[in-house]
Image (tube, rainbow, N blue to C red; front, side):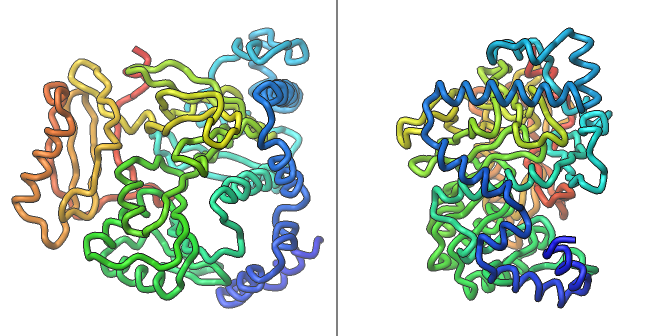
Length: 468
């Protein structure tokens, strides 16, 4: 039993003792914290990321080829799904000569992983050595994902490297608006403070709790605020609606797990008086990236994954990702469901030779479908916080017809309803004839188990329409 296992066994399992341990952990030297939880793998990745940050494009390509080859050879030897697949199609990883040779492998879909997750796990690893994760189901297909400790350490190294672009480190005072808080037998706590962290539950979204959270944030005086984009946008809307002053020393607001749209960026930056900065990642570990410190452009880490772009309808392209960090459950040529437009192979502003997008346009399920199967483009960037509303969400289960569900605020009136209808017509413009959108009012907007709020509840199979 290692030193930290002894500590965990000793403090196990009351709320006060665990909170005391968290406080103690926060004040440990950073190197000791990382070593306890993440081991030497974290430091190896962190060092490698610093060394490789400004490699040439050619060197990245050579690195990615070796990573793809090694991952596929591992999968052939140890992962049941790939053993059978490679044998069926006659694919021999040891014979590949370039990245182009991997194009013979079929794309991996969510449905395939969902239906037989155990076949994707390295058969040599004991279940007790796996870390179980659950995707949010924002694509309509929740999945069980397994990682090992090395994959967790790699993720935190990439995160630390990315956040370093805006000066973030673990010594910084940070408010986190997170999906849920659970310590010991205390489940779904509204908030907890320990060390230099104040964590607020995104499940408490009433105006009463937002006011409490705001007061706590002002007293805590954070350097950074982080959380799911939808939760941060709701809190920002509350701050702006009541004309509340910004927290004084916030350097940046870090957005996780959801696309950061232009209207959300503008709203968050106005509310907090600081830059909104986003990280792009997924539970499946198939792709990872984040914003450039010189712009809002999104960089994909070539050290983490090999990314391809598949044509989709409406001049969109879908990200196909192969991650290099999770050998416990490898995803090879995985259809992420994330759509983009336009990309470059390097960033002229910072000089990194990373695949760069202006923005992620949204997930496949974030779009609406017109009467004749048309994709209604860039829907999500249009959805703004409408006047005197608490939340809104689109719902669609048949082409050409959708609903926008509205949670009304205390001051909502008929004039606000008229304003929303007018704005929808303005947003759709020439596409008004393609789709009918009906407004309905609700008292509750259910979030996913992760705490995320789907901005579109899309029941249609979007791939049918995107691949036309």
